[in-house]
Picture 1 (tube, helix red, strand yellow):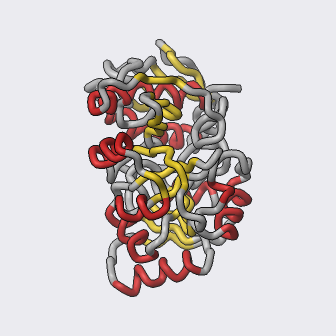
Picture 2 (cartoon, one colour):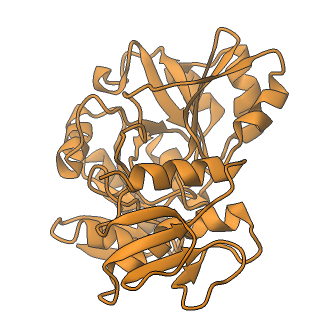
Picture 3 (tube, rainbow, N blue to C red):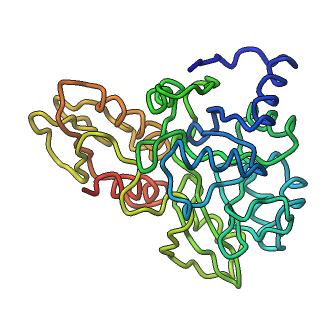
Length: 312
């Protein structure tokens, strides 16, 4: 396995990456959300390889990453309402569930004719997709249900026995997976919470209703998910012996880390997975304790991740 620092944006560098993907090889690439295990989104061979290496059930669909609205509209139906939201939030950490319209999109990625689609914000990744001129599938670079990586080192630890090239783009700026919505029939169906608040989306579609869902076919919907190796306890109020306390807001004596002393939820989200990873790799602690997080805005996404991660 090799880790390549993303320092040179040479034509040759992009050609090497493009060639690997065109040959149905998998790579680990950075996004603004988490590091992804990338493959050609139109290649059944590459898609099957991703499912196999991640130990991911076939019913769990993958997100197709495009470089532009033009590419999205080539392969998927972008209704008037979805276009309003796409223009507002793309490129960015938002995934929309869109109807497939191009036969080259493999059936394995669809659920009743619908696919998960987004345009990422990471400029390096956008350039790679433009060079390939095809959507990429890029689930988080982890084994199914395990902690998502926000650095190249974390991704390497997840797949250290595999011969994968990892492009090191530094720490992910968002740090948690994208908000995932299905906008259809005057409803905004919330499949997964993320950085983008569904109530902000509602401001652009004020006559729509928000609908909670238990859709199990798209990413991030398993009861147990995003899990560190060590036991995780949430909504904790005190520092316990043998447990690494991850605080929020006012610091506690002997806490391990603090997600945000300023109570900034965006900052907390960007640090969450990395701090869980640090505890997993610290022999001084047997478990992880996390303070209560306000359940508002991106706090809903943080609590969603913590709740799933803490399931036995």
